[in-house]
Length: 222
Image (tube, rainbow, N blue to C red; front, side, top):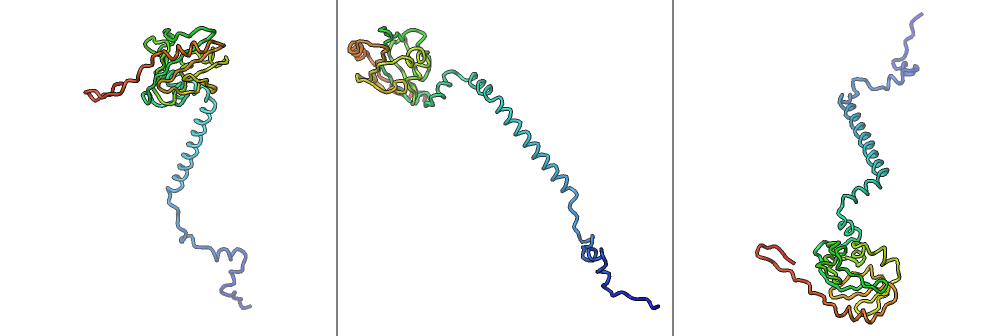
């Protein structure tokens, strides 16, 4: 019998031939650079390591946050702790003097005692003066003075007080008050003869604030 000849394109329809006939010759497929895979793998490893490191640092701080914060506070100067707590201005940003009289159980507190002198550079008593407040920064509340000398919790804030500011009854929280130059403040814990102490407070001398002057070596003195 004569041999049958298949059509030229007949083998295209044989199973498996269609894919072969439509496949791109291997010579035409561009090969990826040999270094691309190692580089991408290295980048992936770096990202993973960075993520693990970041999570580790965050976890450590989160777990030990209280201890870390306490260490930071312990390493700070007590004056700076108060300055940060009350968010006051820089030292020297203000200068004001005020007279204060505090009466507890009908006895006047003597702020000339050494335990009350220069307890904070921002607001304090000095030169053994028993009544004159010196303030050296903006935004300093009177509370900061009492905190620095240890009087806020044990006698001022825990007892009802009668307060006079510049001869007038003051009904707000005097601890949040920021003194102005020439202020006169009377604080009494318990009933007292107000007129007597108001006259005494008025008689106290409030020294003027020294003016700033420029010296010969260009330093500013106060």
